[in-house]
Image (cartoon, helix red, strand yellow):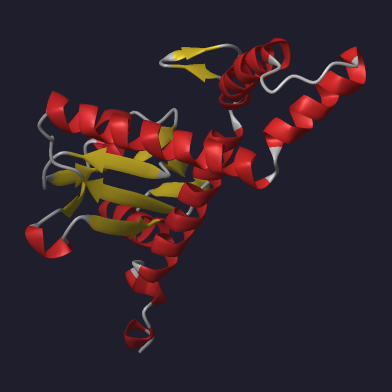
Length: 205
């Protein structure tokens, strides 16, 4: 009786160095077969410097290799069709001076952006006019409007991005996280297409 093995490729695998890839490194397998441990430790590919930092392993090549190794086993693929391998050597922690410089740069840039926006839309004359409408008195600096507005601007930004340093306020992703996720998905799809050797026209023959 033919044994059935279900394979689900991992979408992305990040490694710190070039190494031998086994089936368990790039895929999940489910089976009642007695050879499960042997299957998981089956060598699939040996990474080397010629692969550089990105490699795409196609499920077709994996199943073809496994079929040759285990002719009496039927392999069925579920889920993703490729696994993206990225080599990312461990990086040294960023120096505090660099972190401080970047933080100051972003802080000053953000402050200038907000101030220029308020100047362009004439925010101060608007607040002065609002103060006059509500009180009938002219005031160059209506602080009872400006202070709550400034606090609300900062609080609204924090709630919008759903972060206060590393603290999250709820389980929902922020708009920025959604945009980053969409970008990463598009990037991974592009890499899976362009880096996959099976999509190379030179291999069609």
